Length: 491
Image (cartoon, rainbow, N blue to C red; front, side, top):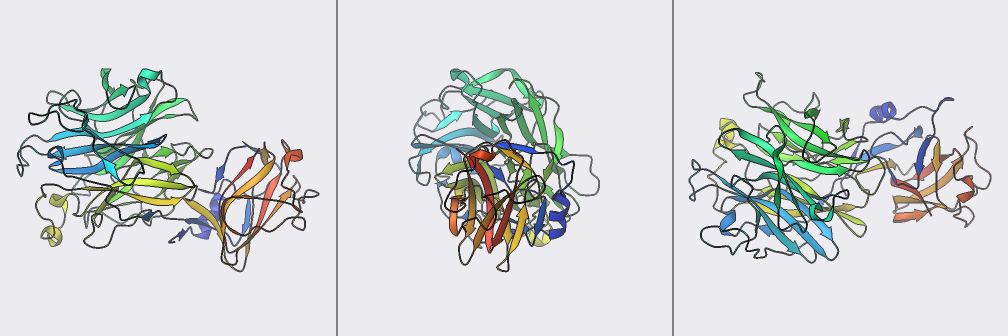
């Protein structure tokens, strides 16, 4: 599997040095990820490595309905509930076929699946289109326009508002702004009053969710800088707003943008941000980077501990474009679609085989961009291991990692590791002075091998660490040829 290592210099900057006045981090029984240096106080021959998700090459959903005579898939949400996978996706088409000058039609459509791979488009019978209600349109907004939609389940809402939606709204008198809607079943939607929940518009997928870490709603959108004079186009960046109520958000503030490590003529098209639900303080984003010089859009990995301060330590693709000629060979847009299936994470994405922004491309590429096909766009998926975004890696020659002081709750320690192919992990627990705790030293530890998302650490066959609950301890990992993704104290 491809992976990308973080330069050691950056790792050392992020890793906190052992200090006498060090504060103990209370992790309770929550899982911890190595998305940055928070849990690296000291190390030797360890690198933080980004592990890309792997394309499946599946055409899960394609444009083939009258509503979709344009393109689909740029913006979508997938939610796995019970035995059903549910998808909300955008269908975008111009007026008469081939007439790009006429007003576009932008609708929210619905699909479902039993396995997440093979999808059907049910006849919902809710809205008329071209004289028939035989279609899968789930919502059309107030102005026959709904763009950049995101659906989420709200854990803080009453049943009638269990599902919420944020979307771009447009009407002639006042231009664009951001609206919201709610539903009890995800099919029948009611627009919120007041009409606009964020007093600005956007031209990409809006992301919103209830942030359980701060008990507020947050929204991530795109901001276009129209005042830039260096580039012959708007500079796109990601902005964030929050609100105690879903109908009223604060003024958006920029939280992610291109920098000097990005190539020239590059900006951030969308964000695909989520609060990772299986670990503590882990916000993950999959922003599609827009390379204007060739028209491609490629997702990277962005990480944050609070949803406000973001970093993109790795600039390589998190999902690579497909081979030349494939449905995803030019653009990939990750949706609001981080879905757990067993010990895997599935990322659904929309893709197209032609470059984006043909009118902005250099003349040398103009001939490669053809007219819009009648039906365009494919929705596919990529797969990765649970918690597998970033790993702390050691070579075959070995390495060591020591955490800051931790206070935990639990009776045993589990690791998400890949130590196959000659790998080995020894787990030692240290006290405040950095000395091995009696009974939990490296000499007492049983080596861990193989590839396991929940390998239990044991000492002379005993996994019980409950006697150390609430006491400040450090975890000392002694590893060889190992990828360490996460750790968690559990009952």
